[in-house]
Image (cartoon, rainbow, N blue to C red; front, side, top):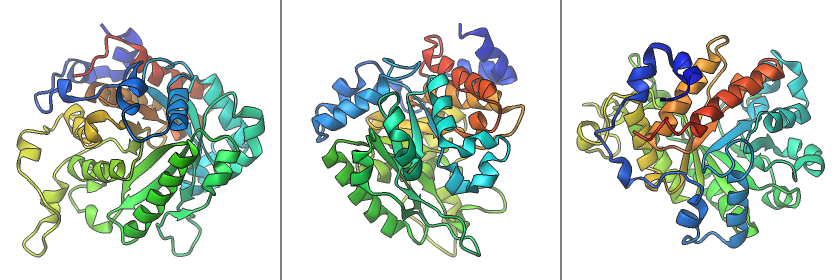
Amino acid sequence: MPNNKTIDLLGDKAEYLLNHQSKTINKDSLHLPGPDFVDRIWTGSDRNPQVLRNLQGLYNKGRLAGTGYLSILPVDQGIEHSGGASFAKNPIYFDPENIIKLAIEGGCNAVATTFGGLGFMSRNYAHKIPFIVKVNHNEFLTYPNKFDQIMFASIKASWNLGAAAIGATIYFGSDESSRQIQEVSKAFEMAHEMGMATILWCYLRNPAFKTKEKDFHVSADLTGQANHLGVTIEADIIKQKLPENNGGYLALNTKESAYGKNDSRIYSELTSDHPIDLCRYQVANCYMGRAGLINSGGASSGASDMAEAVTTAVINKRAGGMGLISGRKSFQRPMKEGIGILNAIQDVYLDKDVTVA
């Protein structure tokens, strides 16, 4: 039986999430996380030995060391969501050193930082915790606001400063996505040549994806295809929002317009309305788990943050995912409380009774 704290935090969703057995994509078809993940999956790939070493370094750090699962603390929000909006609740985190301290004390595998944060902190901390450098951002200051990921960082300089991996975002479905795909593909190629791992923030962005009825930016079918594009440009790990609905392709294919390609079996056989099955479709699109899926922790909601974080972790793990990347829920509160949330997430992945559905 899963530990009592996890059950209590899940509340009335506990039985629904912990006892679900998937009837969609069989778990035996998946390449699941485990202590031998790099040996089992990556040694037969085109990744060079330095990439393998850095991937293994990510898996060997923190409370989840040796499990094949990941708990990552990101701090790119100061650019993506603005510094004031991100850190006003807890101004000590304007200083990137405190984010790194939170990641270390919180038992994380790695910290995802900006290039500027890496430049200030790498000499003191790169040997203590793996750094993931976010190399592109949406600068979020142009008026009116626009949404376009542009390159901020040098791949070579990130390597010189000791980064274990680089991270990048693509807004799939946006007018700028073709350029972003090409830029990130080249950045990932260079990162791999230099021995760094690659993580893709694999997001959708298009006003048409949000209708009066639903926000299909978190639709399983559309996010799944974004994941499939992400692994195609050789992302080693995919970061994706947890799916909240399905049928984005169906909603966008109207009498007035045709969109993409589709198959009814996506909805009748490969998914159901259960959140674990929706997330499993995301995993399947990451080459059946060969590239690990980590889901986003999402924005801070206040008192419910720990319950929400644990719920996301249970869904991700039981779907066959590889972990969580959770920031605002952890750093928008006192450090002790943030550590508690990170540890509660990690406890889900350490609990052998929380099984793959």
